[in-house]
Image (tube, rainbow, N blue to C red):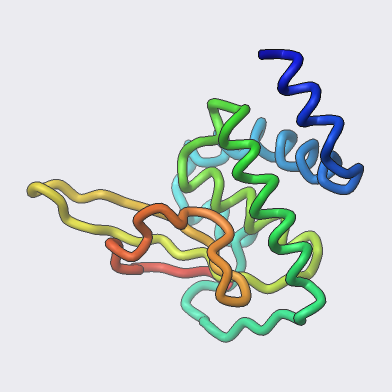
Length: 143
């Protein structure tokens, strides 16, 4: 098992290793941040309610690298599997690179219970939260 992980680690580029390290660091403190009410981290997430985001085509590879890195994090770091945590990390990583993205918070009613989901979209690429996002109605979004 360990040998396989090390073999995979050696195959990825230095840039991807750095992205993984960055997402690892974010994943250590973002779960604690999510214990606070949402209004406390509005400034980090961006402006509420606006939807106009245009990113450059050159950002496409960076966006896809971040998406891949976050899926690796989800696989190897058990505490970073929640959609809200993933979405906040994605938003922070994209914001650091000055790439515009929209983070959606949505709800759905299933079996008389409300379910919540968070996902990030950038240049029509769903960076995080792709699994089942279409079943949720957006109630809040951050640019």
